[in-house]
Image 1 (cartoon, one colour):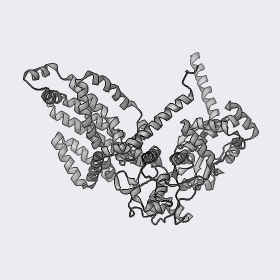
Image 2 (cartoon, helix red, strand yellow; image 1 turned 90 degrees about the vertical axis):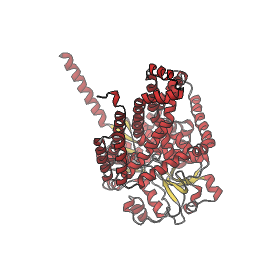
Image 3 (cartoon, one colour; image 1 turned 30 degrees about the vertical axis):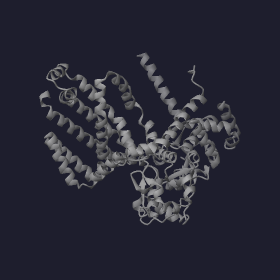
Image 4 (cartoon, chains in turn yellow, green; image 1 turned 45 degrees about the horizontal axis):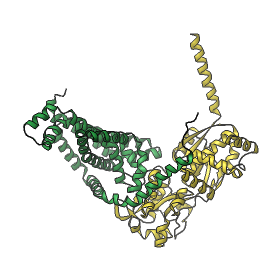
Amino acid sequence: MKHYIKTMISVMLITMMSAVAKADNIKISELNWQSGSMIAYIDSFIIKHGYGHDTEIVPGGIDATIESMLATGSPNIVGEMWISSLGDNALTALDNGSLVLTTDGVIQGAGEGWFISKDIAEKHGLNTIEDVLARPDLFPHPEDSSKGALVTCPEGWTCKQKNLNLFKAFDMEAKGWKILEPGSGTGLNAHWEGSVTKGIGAFGYYWTPTSFVGRLNLVGPLSSEVGFAGEDNWLKCISLKDEMCDNPQPTQWPSSKTGTIITPGVDQAVVDYVSKRTFSGSLITNTLVWIEDNQATAEDSALYFLNTHPEIWTKWVTPKAAKKVKASLK
Amino acid sequence: MNFPSLDRDTITSFKKSIDSGFREFASNWGEWFTELLSPILWLLIHFEKLLIATPWYIFLSIISLLLWKATQNWKLILGFLISFILIGLVGMWDDTMRTLAIVLVSTLVCIVIGIPVGILMAKNNLAHKIILPILDLMQTIPQFVYLIPVVMLFGLGKIPGLIAISVYAIPPVIRFTNIGLREVDKNLKETAQALGLKRFHILRLVELSLARNVILGGVNQTVMMALAMVVIASMIGVRGLGAQVMQSIGNGYLGLGVISGLSIVALAIIMDRAIQSYNKRYDKWRDYK
C-alpha cells in the first residue's frame, strides 16, 4: 500500500512537472520543404538555447498547420510562410489578431511560378510563358505524347488551384496542353529531376530559392507578355477554387512575400528575435546547395548555418542570447 | 560510447556516388525502359478509358453476370451492386474505375510474372534460396525509397505507379505458388509419371491443378496489397481513389477522406469475396466447412 502511494505521488509529480514545462513549450512548425524545415530548426535551436524555452518541432503542410494554429493555438511559430498561399480564414485571422505576422520577407527575392529547364529555353529561345505555350511539342505528356504537359502543384498545396485556374486563363487546353499531376512533393521533385537528367522538356511549377533550381539549371518564374494582371484577378479569382473563378485572366505569377506567422502570447523576447530573422535569397540558395551536396538533414543544415554565419544570426538576437547560443554550438 | 562509424565524408561520398550513378543510369536507360513498357502503358490507358466510358448500368450488368458465372453467389452480387451504386451516388464512380483499372492491370502483371517465378522457386532449390530474400526485401523496404528512382526513370503517372504497386504486391503470388506446388502429394506426381505424362503435363495437369486454390489465395493477397498501395501510388501522380485520399489528407477534408477510403474498402471486400467464392465453388470436393 505504501509503495502504491509513493508511486502515485511520484506519477502525479511528474505529470505536474511536465504540465509546467508544457506551458513554456514553444511549438515550431516544420514545413515540408528544405528551407522551411531548416528555418524551423534554426528557430528551435536559438529559442531553446538562447532564450531557454523548451521547443518542439511539429511537421506539417501549410493548410493543415494554419488550421491547427487557428483551432488549437499550436504550433506557435511558422517560420517561412508564403503569404500568397494563405487562405481566406488565415487572412481574416491576421486581420483580427488571432494570428500575428511578425517578419515580412523572411526570404528576400522568393518566388513561385512556372519554370523550364535552361537547355530547352536557350535552344529554342523560350523566354516568356507565351513562348512556351506555343510549343507543347517540346514538353510531351507521358500519357499522351501529342499533348504538352503542365506540371502542377501536388494536392494539398494552395498553389494547386492557381495552376488550374491559370491553365484555364491561358486557354491551354485549346493550345494542346494537358495537366500532369505530380501527386506529392516527392513526385514533383522526381519529375523535374528525371526530365532534366533524361533531357526531356519539362514545364511547370517550382519555386525559388531552392538548391534544386540551381542544381538542375531551371529558369523561372517565367514572366508573361501580359505582365501581372492585377491583384483583383489574382486574389479574387486565380487563388480561389476553380468553381469560384469563372473568368480568370492570364497573368504572370506575382513575386511572393514570405513571412513568419505566430500565435499571440509567445514570449516577447522570442517575437523580437523572429521579427529580425531574415535571409537573403542567395544565402538561402547557398545553404541549400550545401544541404544537397552533403545530403544533410534539416537539423544538420541549421547547425551548419549557425556555425558558419554567426555574423548574420547574432544580429537577430540579444547579446546575451547570442552568447548562450554560441556556447551550446560547441 | 559511440559506434566507430566511418567518417562523415566517406559516408557522404558513398551516398553521393549512389545518387550520381543512378542519375547516369536514368539518363542512359530511362528512354529505353519507357519504350519497353509502352505496351503496358497503352493497355492501362485504354482499359481505364474503356471502364470510364462504359455506361454504369452496362458495367453493373456485365460484372454481375461475370460474378454469377464465376461464383453463383447471389449475396455477393447483391453486395457488389449495392456498394457500386453507393459509390456512384457519392460521386466516386470515375475514380473507382481508374483505381480498378490500375489494380487489375497490376494484378495481371503480377500473375504473369509471379506464377512462373513461383514455379521456378518450387522446382529449383537454388532459385528458392536466391528469390526468398528478394521477396522479403520487396515486402519490407519502405515504398518511398523506390518511388523517387522509379519516377526518375519513367516520369510521373501510370507506369511508375504500376511498378510501385507491382513490386509491393507480387510477393504473395510468388510465395503461394511456391508453397502450393511444394505441398502437392509426391505419390500423385509419381502416379502421373507412371501413367507416362511428360514433366510439363505433370506440372499443368496435376501440380498446378492441385495447387490452384493455394495459388488463388496468393492472387487474392496480391489484389489486396495492390489496393493498399493505391494511396502511395497516388503520390507519384496516379489518379483515382488514392488521389482522393491524398487530397483529403492534404486539405484536411474529413468527409472526402472517409468516402474515398470506404470506396477502396468496398472494392477490396468485393474482390476478396469474389475470388474466395470462386475458389470454393470449384473446389467443393475439398470439403469446406
